[in-house]
Image 1 (cartoon, rainbow, N blue to C red):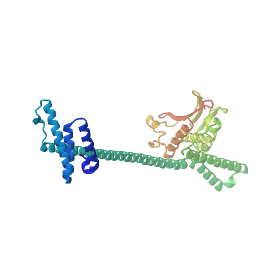
Image 2: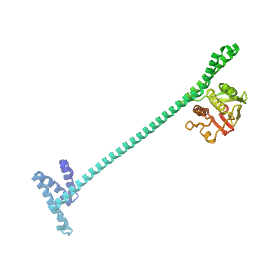
Image 3: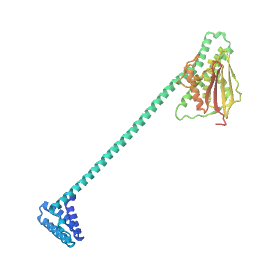
Length: 377
């Protein structure tokens, strides 16, 4: 029925075959339906010859149906399909077909709409993920830039704090020589020049340590430890502050055995020891003693720096190695020194060790540097 408007030749072929099969299997009612469809088509086309042919078939089929009903004593009048009823049945069939086609088209449109909605949802979700990823990357980049800005501030503070001392000593000594050049013997001048050279060399080594710390901040940094004589390391770190110790009549007692070996990085160890000794000298009472000693603890070497200064509260200790919470206290930790201690704490971590402090108000402070022994490494 659907093909009759689209492909009439194919539709006529199927109707003819259907009519043949209905006659073959003795289905007179079906024969009437198929013959009626053919009759309607040829009548609409004005082909009276073919229309008459199928009208005869309808009548013959109707007659056969009547005879068959009479054979079984059935009132044939209740089963006669008049032309009007037949057309109504055919019209109902066509309507049902159209409704089916409409439903199929509607279903396809719904599927297309669902597909479009699904695709839009997927695209929106993907866009949201991209936006989220971009936001995370931007925040990470901003955080990285902020960290580097803080790092550069720290670097400037350390340079100002740790390099000022040796250069100040050099300037003071040269000024002294300039004003009193005739008051020194040749041997004394030679000793002063030798000390100036030693201070300059140590300043260069200090700069190397700071540059090594800068290098450690970069990606891919690998730490390589080496065995070092701890006694000599303490003496070398303390040599920059001899003048300050004499001014305050402070004595640094190195109680570490001369053969004591520690496993770490030379420049980082010197940086840490210098900053601990510098702070100890700065806050220790005049005439006091600063002791440096060592002990072993579970395959680790602990170096202790004990002073008799003002001490710190527990709150001050908790903020000691944090660059975000530095406080100025009493004769106070200056900003540069506080940052230097934070860097020292970080360097200890690079060497698989740790740095901490214990203190008591008016009784002094002890800093502890713990590093693994050579066997543990």
